[in-house]
Image 1 (cartoon, rainbow, N blue to C red):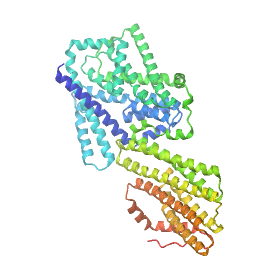
Image 2: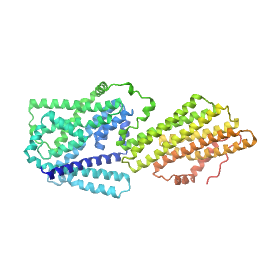
Image 3: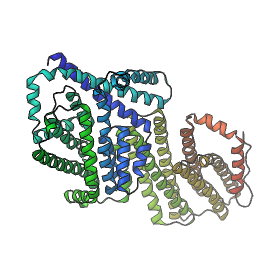
Image 4: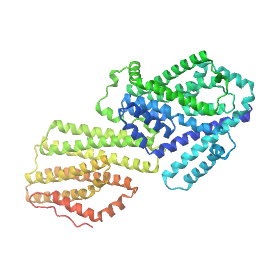
Length: 597
């Protein structure tokens, strides 16, 4: 094998690995996070978990990616360890899909159908279609399909290059002698495990073995232990992913390793025991690409059928190996942040969903802080005031954690839709944090009034109560629409925000009248102004949240243009009048509503 053949083989391997990565990336983007959501919502049925593991891995073409996602789910508390076992087993079966696709390159035959089934025949067509989609289509979905098609074509082209490069080895005696070394079950298994661990992909290592098998120089005796070892080596990705994770996540990686290790040991002992008795003639026969796919599938399906009934024992074994410690007890606050697991960054669609889930929790904290702060205005409580401060600090941490995580996510390969959604989500956490700040300002004003023994007049209290109710309802409406992605409710936020603005102006006008009449003091006026301004700005931030939600849904990101069109809408005017009748200031009747422009 000359230098040029070596270079061709290295180039073919590089194209093969790049194509596999592009294929996986295109499939992940095309799934849009839907498969990952299915993983989160699976039932406790082990059979369904296995089927879901097969489905997801077959689609994204990577058992390592599926297992890493599972480790992340377990680490963040989304999934129980018992649920993870079935998915891990299913992922091992799903990864055999790649071996069957690659085996198409070994098809022989002169008739038209057989020629068309060979990847060398249809890959160029797929590549041409893919590049047209990538270069000329404006829709992100078609671009993702183009990436998928080009990735597959490059993968098959790389496979073909490797096969051509190593074809000369069939006439090299030394190559046959090296392969005979790996006929030793232990050496062959170790070789398969090491190669797979280095490239961190069982699909890729199986593909390399299939390209070598295309020479006709690889016997079954060599291929079998190498394939067994490849199933052990693929566990390295999950093991590395579990470093720094909690105990349950480490146990998920341990279950993955235990399953593949036990399955390999059982199959190796069983197979070689039968070989010793019956002396299989096939052992010295050359294996082809399809034969490798068959062995790979039989092992993974057989191991799953054999060990699935003992899944609970695998969990117990992992629990015995990795024991609990006091450092693993986390408070509720820390558990909330665990959903922002770095492992999810490799699958941006699910990382986006985790960001959204964490943002919903941030909204709940912010809303609770505002509720307590408003309550302090009518009945002061030192403990509740301290609680508001604590919750505001928590919203600050949410913004820091989410912001840092989303900045990392923004550097990943995102669809155009996810990129816009991520940008607006970053603005949303800023709005939530500012609402938390205003809640603390209201609590600070209430504390100062309590310390100075100041109290608003009865009329001022009743008027402020109406404004507080309107502002809090705006928050409740905006936050609920965000959590439920309820666009109809989101459209009701802006009219109520306008009413809050009107109420704020009216309260200030009435305060000036009381100040002129000498029934109110300047100091109390400053307090009132601080509180009403905070409430008015809270409503403004709610408007930002609702508008952002609508913009992502309708794929339009011109805020001022949207608000201008919406305010001219008859529905807006109807809701605006409805809210002005609902939030009535005492004594003077309905608030005077300015004409809508």
